[in-house]
Image 1 (cartoon, one colour):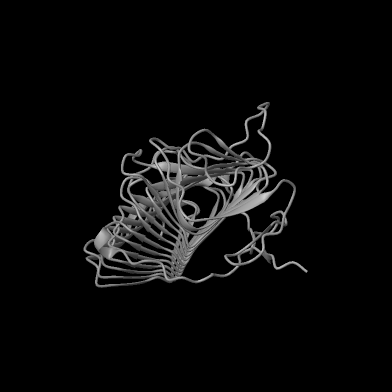
Image 2 (cartoon, helix red, strand yellow):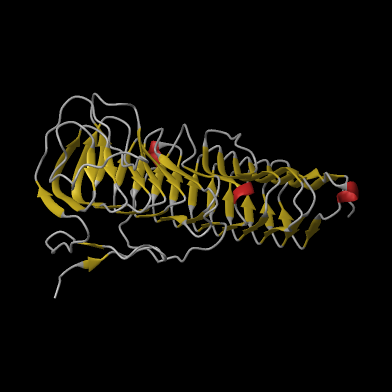
Length: 399
């Protein structure tokens, strides 16, 4: 009887077994090896995993990262308990998997690329660049599976294209550390971020232009002084759902906490940017925003949106909407907004503002105008406003 451990995986992932440290690794097609210790590399390095159409694939994976040349992985390979230097592209093919446990991974060029049905697993691992390396690197997961637990990524970004990836209790630091998600029409795959911490100042921490997205119980900091490491926990297993879910997260100091829109134009100091044209719905619920220029910003022609149960404190604009012509109803309800200039600033119709609590704004609880004839589709009801200069300052709105 084997001692293999089945990795927790997203629904729909292929059944692949990986060993944990000290356990037996179950073989698949190809072969595997377990490597312990340090592999010292040379000059410049790239860590990329890819499958090139029509390219001849060398037989079987190496037992350790090579000193130079592309490292092709076709079977199951494990690196653990050491420091590993990567010196060139790593290519995990459709039949291959790479598992990295309790390691320091050092490279100085362009990232890991996982293609088609390849699989990349990391746990208790730090990924960083060598001193003579490039300023940033990326890990690309294309039509593939990635699972990352209790890892730290310094100036490392991820690209997930029609793949599925889960990040649990991970830390992202550096001006270019973050996650990019895109899809070419495969709606069942997704990106799940659970209990992670981001420090981002130059690019969006998470940029989703399509596919299913879940951001749960994570923290986003603009300033290093606010940083708190993620507390290790496994998190809950979330089944893929259509659209984007951003729930129970904390945002401190970014210019924009969450941006929802149909345009690629965005402010670079945005924690989460979601292009709604590529998703069916967005649910922004029970998040906390502190000292943001704008807590939640809606722009363009989005799909169905719910913004409910959020706490916004001392934000310039708590919730801001502009040029919003959506036919699906947008619900903004049961949010608590305290401080800042305006609790809600809008220039849109087709929005239902209900049961929000707004207090201590230097200007208005509600400020703005509808861009539809006579404010068609705009509802403002049962809100509680106190301590603001104006309760509401509105135009083109029938009250």
